[in-house]
Image (cartoon, rainbow, N blue to C red; front, side, top):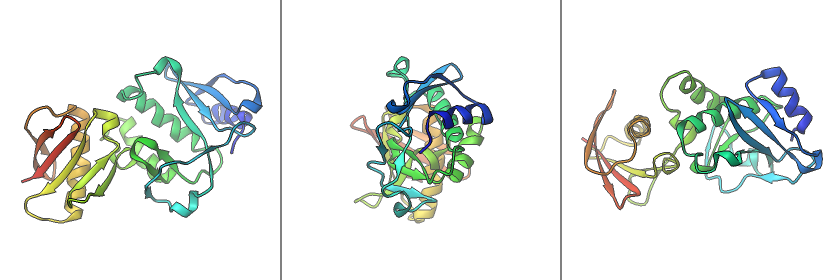
Length: 224
């Protein structure tokens, strides 16, 4: 686990952020600044040890590879309280995660809202195009799983739009097709926001999906 000096060195070497507050080393944290927003980096060497908790989905990394590993935690600064769900804040957080992943050789980047651990290479490949104006990095920030009803369900989307979805295909084209639709649907929902009434989302390359809200927190999505 890097210490505060390693963090300061990375800030100078890679750029993209600056250290704005560095407490005593035995506190194990520092405040960093990027694009006018401050975040706390906790779990630095010399302070309390942070660990991975509640991770259920692994992409490009095995559970055994991170079992028992220490973690660095990136947390929004106090002035961002209540704003951590906003896309501009998430974009800066993702850019910081990419920069922090260049310190040493981390095994994974974990995104807690999706309960996911993603290899640094896959995370960067998903996030950097988004930061340059490309599609939302669904693979990095939202998990997909088959639920008990055989639908493809999202996890982590609620952090962004306050709703998760369950996706089915009336024509039974299989998991691979559903996964392609789900990735495009995540991008559409992040752009359009929560669903309050029935709406048809026309997705590039995969066709139309009918969306209906159930109970406010869940979207039922059906491929035509």
